[in-house]
Length: 135
Image (tube, rainbow, N blue to C red; front, side, top):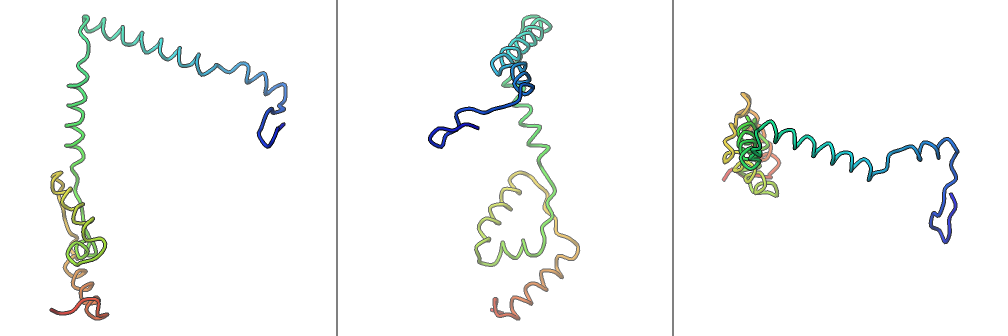
């Protein structure tokens, strides 16, 4: 690499590499080819539809509605998540917001079978280490 004032100015490459570079299609050529193919496809679709264009707004709205239905999920929360939504702390507000969003989205929220035991264990440890008091 040849530089001038610390900036690259030229690069020495092999003749083979130079020939490969010369034979590569330019970005403008690829873009023009893509546009031509895209225009041909659009014309073909329009012809098949008898000159009626696609209602993309309606199609996209249907896709969005389907996506919202598909994104409704089943959520399983563990004891630490539940406790952090109840007890004051740095994660209380963001976790409550997340839980609220899940409920708005129609997600189903479950707790594992051992949730009561895990919650009891966590609360007992918090009391034992004086991070939480009985009151």
